[in-house]
Length: 113
Length: 114
Image 1: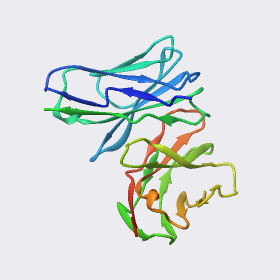
Image 2: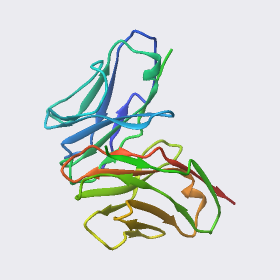
Image 3: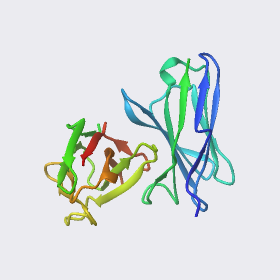
């Protein structure tokens, strides 16, 4: 069974640009969550999608958005990139969210220059 | 506010020895899960062990066990017979049962000395 796949693995962008990250969950999983990991703030919850609907959202500005497709694949978009957006972005999938175990991908390392 | 605190940024242990990683958390909820995740250099977060708050018995997974003190809001991880492959960043985490958001501590980097 394939794990959670995140693409791309590495990304370098310039300030002001926008970026889209992709996450393919484990087959059959309907919940996808996104986390931002930085040395200073640690791991912080961005949002969670279930059956194409955003069910939960963390405390991030509106520049951070996401969506989920009918096949449960999810994308995360960051517009007007700032230097502080440089981070490892992790995606986690689970069957139903809530009471089921979350499986993480290897992340996308975003560097904003 | 729900918070998870790991007071040890880094720890070292000799191979084959036992090490305990500390974690405390703060919550007003009564129904929740606690986790320890391992993040090796590959960056993939791997679940090591989980504990349901309603269970008094401490969870055990092979060489990994926890000491769950609900009243003290403490959740430490003990690694027995440490192996070189245990070297990684370890995160203590918490999730309310009715929610999907996982709240992580800042992590403890564990070094295994050969």
